[in-house]
Image 1 (cartoon, rainbow, N blue to C red):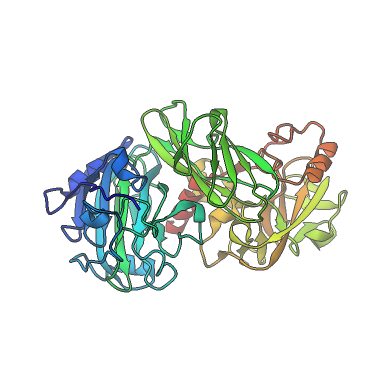
Image 2 (tube, helix red, strand yellow; image 1 turned 90 degrees about the vertical axis):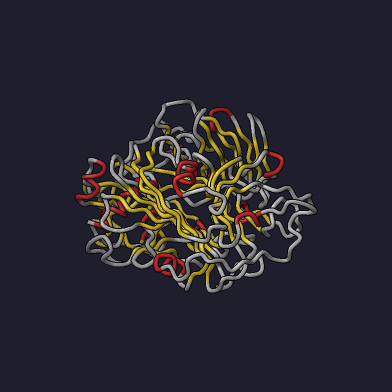
Length: 527
């Protein structure tokens, strides 16, 4: 147990207004125009802490807190921390908000939320936050799942776009274990029984135009047991964006990834990794994740990840700075791009199941007609978590049948929205970035066999009529494969550098990053 230290909160009752809260959390690259607050006057305010008082429970030394109870009850001022069995206040916050009801799938209570009109400089905006609740762990998988909702409206879109619903059922000690902190032993200075590490929400916005955002929190199904959203000061910004990375790590092996390669810094400043999974690091620091894997920081954003012998999916965070701004990124252990066994590939002799193809067989390609396969590989894995295949239902992207691919396998998208946004009428989008929970879904359960097809160069092929990519070696894919498979590929392509992917052809089309795919998907739905 730790001693309780009061974290001061200046609430709405005490004079903090919506503009104060908006100006506290919005930072560089964003201009705030107006703001309003809806909720109980004791459920929102600006918090201020010193490093010792925070004890790792807040996303920054100052920022905004939104609560379904009383914001000042996040801590108590004396004695030992977290001595109450539960914190529960039925406030005068809004009940039955239609947006929150739809997001939660149930009636909501005690909502407190901040509405802000703003103009961003760039098309991607981030927000750093923590979520905490006294519903952990007893009600984390029940109907009583308090949640955070963020909705954005911009002139590019004809309707509101909602993001990042975090609740006690999505993130807890059994799901995304590395991102959750258990406080049932009262080790941290908060009255909440559990909370997240500092997380980051990446949002697509319309630059140079007026956008609106709603950031809120609500009780679900009843008004009991309180939850809190803490947003770091100056963290809602567009100048620095940490983009999610994916990597495969064998249970008894290791892999290295440069997490800075795809991060976006509008200032052009040098980026530095400051934290791994919430812990401060410097060069050669080694962090052991709650799931057992070890992560070591090298120079220039290189992270070496070592397996712990267990076959499992895992995630962790890293924090970066450009000297002015900060952001938090994610690393997901995931599979490599490939077809699911049973997928039928177009050939000059008709459609053939991918697992029956062999090197030398001719396959129809979009750009170069029939081309001979140079290498075929296969691997069976458990279809769970980030390794679960993606099902694209028939007709989703034109005249094609049902197709199952790995989460990172890219699909060719061809439409005017892509050309408008990116200057290319055809782009490649990872299947995981197309998931919409109706026509594109994850298929969890059992075992799945993934098959890789490789040509003399990167190609677009046809899988059950859907245009998809062939295997493209790169720093994350080649190094994630078993050693004998890498040796086989390098024997066929001796000019290939297995550590970088250099020496092979460029991608057949522009490959959208995750946030670009979100922008395309949202704009396409609104078109």
